Length: 215
Image 1 (tube, one colour):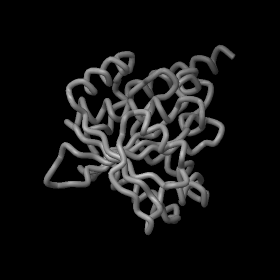
Image 2 (cartoon, rainbow, N blue to C red; image 1 turned 180 degrees about the vertical axis):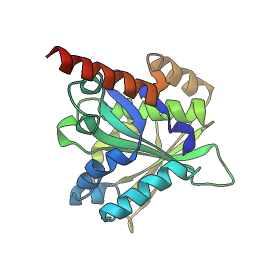
Image 3 (cartoon, helix red, strand yellow; image 1 turned 180 degrees about the horizontal axis):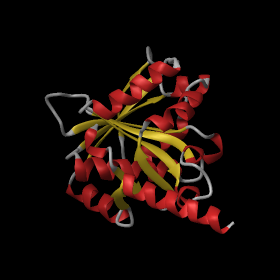
Image 4 (cartoon, rainbow, N blue to C red; image 1 turned 90 degrees about the vertical axis):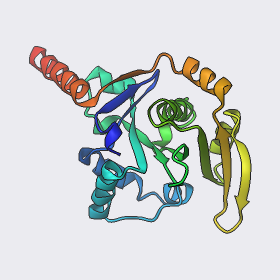
């Protein structure tokens, strides 16, 4: 989606940045994991197919994706952006007749970052972006039945079960964002800072170069 190609959202522990070509190699390594393939209902792709997928995410108007970074590592300037990658978060506008509905998908790919609040914050940040920038009022989440942690997280956000597919071994959960929930979401996310990605990246890279000169 072109809308978010120059957007970065910074929360408490996570930063969301656009999915760009330099991220693909790390992402491709993640998706070789059979565990992640199963949890995300994904098929393994070649590296070239992964680059094609990244380009489609950037171009297609019905898909919005961000790469999840460890914010503290990223803003420190002590490592490359690719080394700060934690996972990704996506919105799929699945119903052409209802542009207010989106399927949300969150993946914390790095095992060491699970159970540390990243999934919760990233989910809320993406819902915040969907509500404020895309006009989303209804969210769906389709989760593998074995992924009890993710199911529990979405239930804590008051997503309700819509259906269970024994064929695909997944549960579909849904949430309608009424005025009360929108107010709550905005209050929870009032610390989120939205900036221009390219400008922020240049500033961080400049600071890194300065640190190298000092050293």
